[in-house]
Picture 1 (cartoon, rainbow, N blue to C red):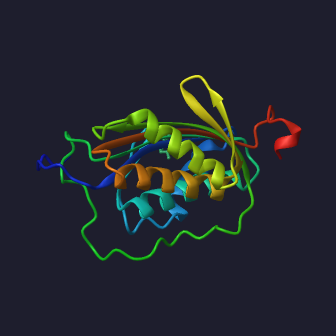
Picture 2 (cartoon, rainbow, N blue to C red; picture 1 turned 60 degrees about the vertical axis):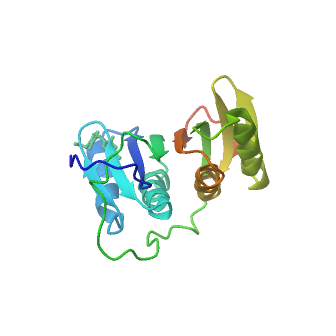
Length: 198
Ligand SMILES: Cc1ncc(C[n+]2csc(CCO)c2C)c(N)n1
């Protein structure tokens, strides 16, 4: 990792996908390979994949890697930590070429997900006010929202959920949080998903 210092506004996400199938290696490697990552810096190891770049590209890539696997019908789990503004971050490991439009499409795919997210708006003042405001934003996106311990539960379409979470992350940053962290855990095609949620 480059050790250039600076309070960089580059966004990043460390995430993993877990397809519940014997062919998990092909699913994970195939999805990462098919995803257009030309607008992000990316590194995969045995635990996670890390992407760094502009917010819209970080969300486009993580959404596409999950959705490419979930749309096959296989039970898929996804875990992600999104971060921007970490004072300990470096300016290194970022994409420096031409930044294009998010290129991963799949916006027409209809896929249900159950998810939980937790928002940590640091350094901006009244963090609970920000959290309640951003939970309301997910409701306005048509996502079913319910309270659970340590997180907020979401139920809805994968694309709607990712677009809502991207807005939450962007607005938390824009409204004055100097360091924003958001954790997301998602599940698609779970055999224990309740009938009324499909
Ligand atoms: C997005 C994502 N990135 C990395 C891993 C870690 N991982 C677990 S199995 C496997 C394939 C064989 O090496 C890899 C890369 C993951 N699960 N999801």
